[in-house]
Length: 203
Image 1 (cartoon, rainbow, N blue to C red):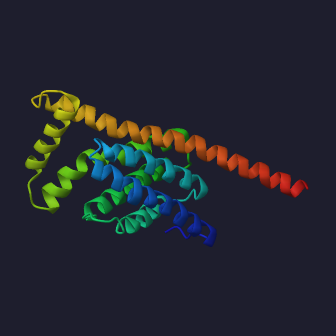
Image 2: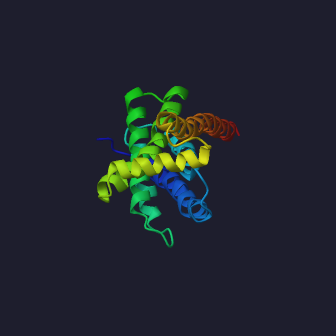
Image 3: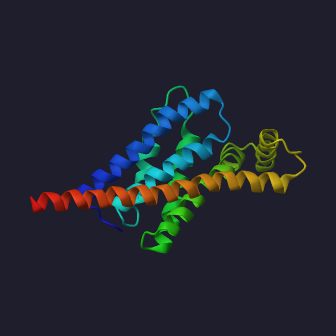
């Protein structure tokens, strides 16, 4: 099991809290405004933060730890039953962690694939969460998901595979972009830190 230094624990807390702030504030706005594909929007933003955080704490378990911090903060969302959202956050972080751990060293490709894996969960989440945990049936919630997707995409509900493929692509695409931006932004921030450190030591 990875043992984090005090600095790394602080960084995990900071990046977990940043994602938590987005989930609690912006997530509540999207929820009440009934914005479509809000899971893709929030997931992409969460991946962006997670990937930057992973560059600052490049150890196995760091991404999952950030997700746990975020899931805890999600409890403070007002006027919502947040247990399903907390589970979604945890699963996104777990999937991202699994991919990143599989690749080992951080890279642009691993960040993009980790992001895509994390946000793809948002398609399956309501089906499994409400279908199994809430005992309402997987078939019921799969049908509900497809019908909602058909209405949003303007496609006949009979095109089940096409609707599912498009929806999964939208969710995965948001994570792919989030992972790419996380890699690029994180690299620039860290390069800037090195430059400032070198300037400080030179003076």
